[in-house]
Image (tube, rainbow, N blue to C red; front, side, top):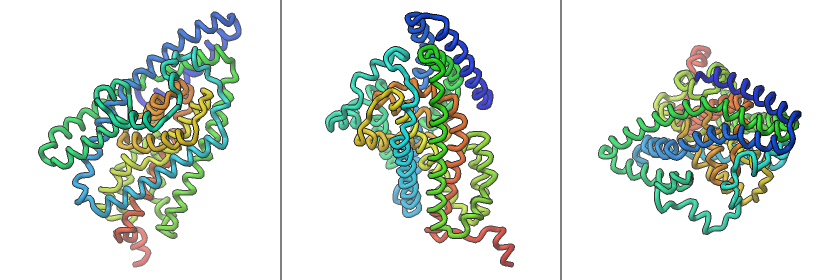
Length: 419
């Protein structure tokens, strides 16, 4: 299903779910409403389980392939180090910004999802967030990859993938057939993501119908504050990124923004930062970045430096926790932030990648993930701004590394002006 069609169907599902839910809410008694909510929400359960089904193979394949593409760490050398320094710093700032905004404004408390009866998520709730050092260690270090995949223990899968990827890189040519196989497998899984997302309208219909039937129209008071605080986060993130960009590029920051204006517009309208990759490469070279730097830094950025998506991941995950009245202490939130830092790597190109990661993180931290289905109707709007922000972040990263390497020339246009 094409992306615009899917968005249209999600909106149709939202309106239909609202109508059906409101009709049930007004015309039936409490017992009937509860039975209806439980039954209709099975649609959401199906959708969420389908998404959870592909998380483990997706993380494993993409992360191993991503690490192997880094090549021999010695040959990557200076440029790789500088790029990763930028990526890690920008990612942490983006994740922290989402965390701070949610803790200040608390958008999740505007909605009340009844946890026990709407999703049947009691199995997720047994050990909410009582993290001890021992439990944390058990969450991180797998005793079996199969067990980790069966239980969707993302951190354990990440750790195994890192060891596997580094070992494959060390073996070089000997491991190439395996890496090619995993690369092919990752493309197959990405195709599956596209198929699974076609079930999103059913998930939205089930969640909205169940929620409106139980709560009435007050469920929708959530969308305004959620979108408003998310937009505030995007504005602050742009201000931070462009501020740092100005410190590095000085007055040339204006020229860069003019150069990438078209890629930004395409990313905004298609909700895909990947769609503008070829055009962005071309414009950055025209701006004056050396082609070898662009060819190295930009693909890495698409795997490791999705600033807008990062900010959204902490924002959405913690909002869903608030909506379920789950109090996460600061230590747990920071643990979540570090997990997001790892699990968000290497999933560029996944349709609605942020939602897949948010769902994974909700499962790991025992947060009932049905809130995802309630966020879906406005996710398209959020995705437009996320995608633009991802493009700005990667363009700035490429220019910054070029400047640090002494490989940033005047653009073609500036050369003409000088002559």
